[in-house]
Image 1 (cartoon, rainbow, N blue to C red):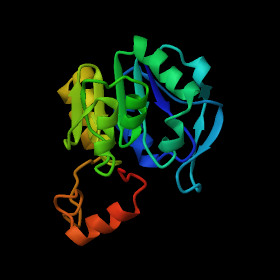
Image 2: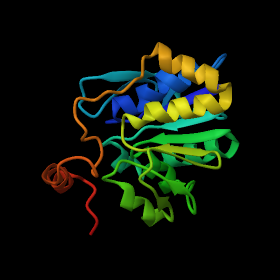
Image 3: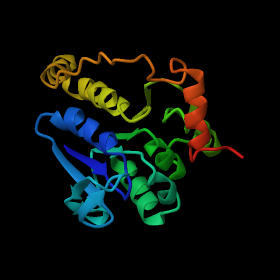
Image 4: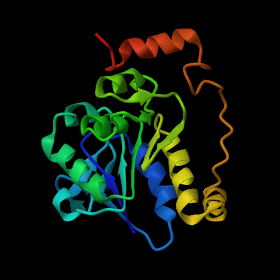
Length: 211
């Protein structure tokens, strides 16, 4: 089984690394980071890079596709090379997944039309433009498509899919070994729980503004 994690300039690191650390622990699976060109790909801050060991044209039939989000997602919405690869990979994949605004790339490729999906809370309404039914759930499964909400939810997505493929016991073992037992110091991890003024401040600075 081959797991292909897509990289592009200014991706969000945890969007890719969360699934890598969970879903990537499938028994006998090969995990590859893939991009238009091989070599280092910088995250949104520019101070961290992951290495794409394979170019898009070298990964033609992955079993699982993982698409992270991040500020760099916006220009990729019109990148025909990337969108064509997503369509081709999806044609034969067993699972096609995303984290955060990666679902907008799947939607732009026409893969989520008529389906339920999630994304970062700031970007949810933009899914509607592609005929997708947005939901605020943390992980959403619709057929072979599994989408996760913002950033950290990629860990949940990875564990969810890991359990379906390898069984609950294996997924629980991975959760235990990674000691994924969230106990955040603040209860502000969603717009429904965070202080209203903070939500509005962040929303006002967002690139996701409907006009």
